[in-house]
Length: 258
Image 1 (cartoon, rainbow, N blue to C red):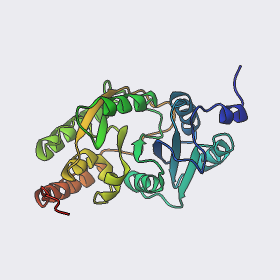
Image 2: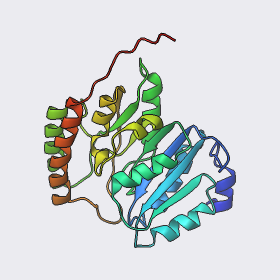
Image 3: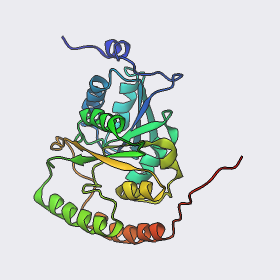
């Protein structure tokens, strides 16, 4: 028998309400994902029922009814928080808004299109907890991408060029499923499209980054917000900028003499 929204709210395991301190904040930037966001929230509820968590969905100026779906969902999910940008500002800005509002020390991000199965969140947490040293980020790496050939080819080329220049050791920086410390993220230099360079930026800050294999699946509804031109040209400019940041960074070894 299918559970009602009220039943869901009362049986959500260790999900947290507005006055509780969660152990994990899930940040989901969305734009025009009216058919995807509802099922995705249901999956998150089921996958994370054993954790104290909150979900922050940042609606980046949607015009397709996504806002109405999120408003309805809030009546059933006590752990759901919604931030709305009146105008679209892009994925990096939406992520920044969500992380700034997060209450947990650790934040995980994933796309709102449903292509990142929420079960991957648990894999990232397991990898963090099993690491031999403290880590600042666990970057998901898609084990088998379910995108068209052109997107896979362009991403392979972009990742190869970026990895060769930045030497961040990440083969799939385009995977949005990432777990990281909130304080370190907020200390990073902010710029549009920064989400594509998060591992290198965290490393520049002195944080250790590890990877974990995660699943990927086909997009069921809607269309991708990224194409060839809005990925290639900004990516080239941003890559030059991140290279400049890397080469101008000094990480001192500090002896405290209090």
